[in-house]
Length: 234
Image 1 (cartoon, rainbow, N blue to C red):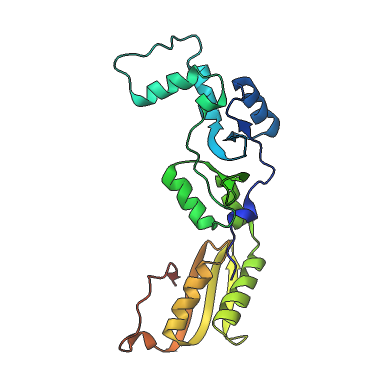
Image 2 (tube, rainbow, N blue to C red):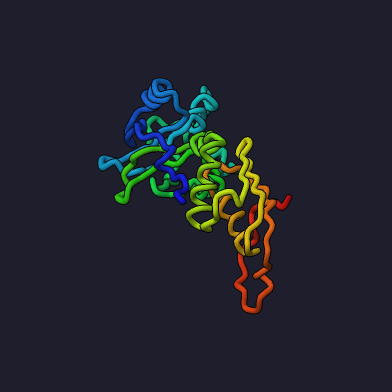
């Protein structure tokens, strides 16, 4: 079962600027490409940082204001004042850049964005060179998959390939990304596995596991414990 990865949703034709790109040129690039941020790269294409609209807005915020440092000044205000006086990408960018790889799963990329509190991630190759960019909106594209495609993956990859369930044993319905499975399997452990694997299919919003079982093998001595299933019982 193949999960979607960053390479499936990232923008490959990514706009970049260098560390010495002037402020006005950065504004032009954002407007021309209709993006809200650009990676800053060195001469070898390595990601050095990211310049966003938020970084550029400090120039507007401090327009006409004195840039002298005050004795008692919060770090955030000091950073804003410094960027307000900046004229090139090196002094405007947020660095170091928080990056990801093309083979990173969408789950891992989403968790990285949340942990680092960023809205986009430059995508780099094994040498650290920028090969794309992925945004929060890009990650949500996985949920644009059709219900029919999601159902096919659940039936073909989870039930047939992994669990070897005979056709007609389980009824699978998908509506707005919510998978409902009904029927009966031989073992309780197979029911649990079916629910967990269905929840991992790309585009699934939730799983309603209505599967029944003939034999509860989870009560046998020495049965391995599994993580709590992310599915919801009906």
